[in-house]
Image (cartoon, rainbow, N blue to C red; front, side, top):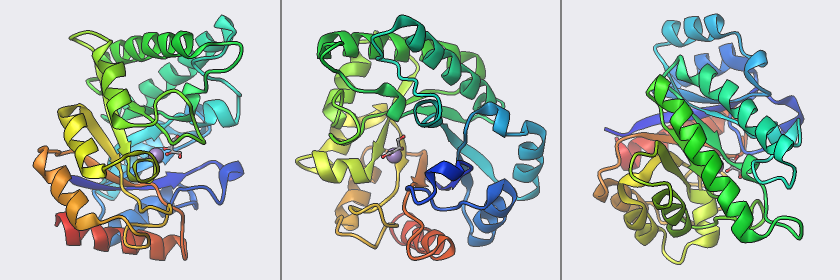
Length: 272
Ligand code: LER
Ligand code: MN
């Protein structure tokens, strides 16, 4: 059975970004529960911003799970990437992510690598950057095993990374990690709409390597507010036996509450 999740951002500096709920964990849990979501996905400045005991209580009180935790603040706040030319910076990036893996791990939630993957540049060739990225994914996947959670790799559209932009490239990356890696692909429908030739075919290419989905429309509005053909896409998602989270990472448009409501209505329509 697929499960629904809604994003909660605790990063004030990112306000206006593609997260649905912005008023803290308590208000976020309340809205998620009221609307019938199964889980929340949290984007924070880092583990120090989250009181894990309080989060546990909130999740229990609202009968919610934690779907995943973001790591983007490592780049936004600390300027860290896993493909920096400086090995010390790359190590700091991995340490930052390990702390987030620990924080999410307690709740059975994997950490997502998105913007911290960085870019290849004049200083770091594409091959070298992809090598750093693969090494980091392997190490972080291994680290996540102790919590029984996967490490979640998210390829992004061309404006946000030049490393992997399509599911096929993420599949190649993961296949290069060998047999026992613990990394899954995050397929974000917004990025897929920009980069894939055929979104449904891309889901079939990813198959059981896809372990998380950002549920959002073509223009980053909640599903139903853009032009993705969700009849076909939901059929493709079902056809690969996907049974994890569809997590709404969308603009709070036209308002936080409306965006959350529209998301759960779309989720129920296509997956209920
Ligand atoms: C940003 O576009 C995005 O999709 C995030 O999930 C990556 O950090
Ligand atoms: Mn995303």
